[in-house]
Length: 287
Image (cartoon, rainbow, N blue to C red; front, side, top):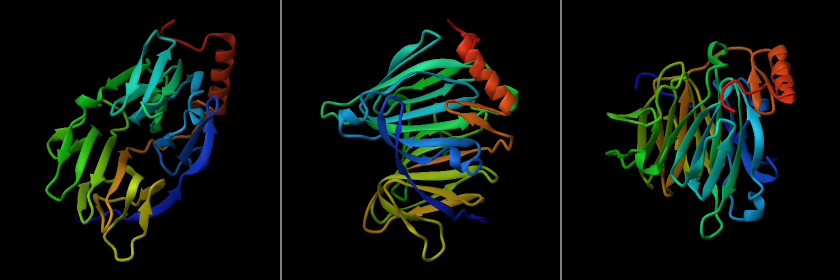
């Protein structure tokens, strides 16, 4: 690679309570705008105690963003104002485009041992399409291709491309990539990235290093790694395996007005959205 990405910043995820009382870890959020543009928020909601997550995320609105849920274990029951209902299970990904507005709920359930967990990522929408029709891409675990590379890496391709393998989530405005990468001990991954795109990794098992320079910091479970610009990146391990999410997207570069679950471009638009919600005129499509 002629210009390899290296670590720009490492953030430690922090304990946070959201919804009706869900204990999770927040990798980044409101305080980090626009550092991860086009991404707004990243939450790790893994948990082994039902009391920490069972109250879930009751009915709430979204407008102007996309919410991406990727499950590792357990399930999330989902329902919305458009009449959609379903279950996001282990290995599934749900890419929801809220667009002009949706009201939904997400209620987690543990597996047979009471364990539940996954990740939710929020991506911003450009002003030109913020009020687009809401839509879903619900992808089952068996629909997500898995690639094993010569260097030892195993990658689940949710969105984007690894070699000739393309992920099932497509036609997303920010041209994203979303990969679940597993590296065994003593292995290396060299992965191309699109110059100009924001790229970050989230480590959720083991530890390893990123970048080619000597002395790169070791990153571990719960670390968010933001990279500099470049045409690719290198990840490696020594005596321990690592598993991480690798996410990228094209920055939007527009003003952000954000409060709670609604993200617009101006305070006037934001206030108008909340007024519509109070008046019952928030939903533009569906019942």
